[in-house]
Length: 103
Image 1 (cartoon, rainbow, N blue to C red):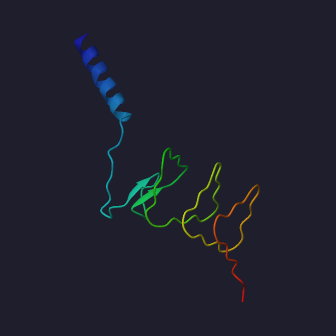
Image 2 (image 1 turned 90 degrees about the horizontal axis):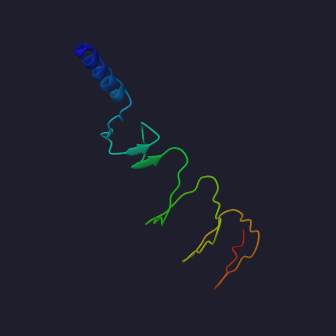
């Protein structure tokens, strides 16, 4: 009977360890990735991301495809549009507006 309990305990431990989380890997490059094993940037996320709260970007941001704003968008400082902009609804400009003339 003792053998049965010992074998059962070992089986439970082995089974539980098979579901344990693997350790975190820190590549020598210093890059960290979520959803990727080979991050190309300091922080790279592959897949859908949901950020709640404020996001602060100290320098610049590049959006390679599209940007959808579901509420209000406030831009402080100068803004440059390269290409076209489609606006549905109200579009208000406070301050000066300069239209670039194509040469």
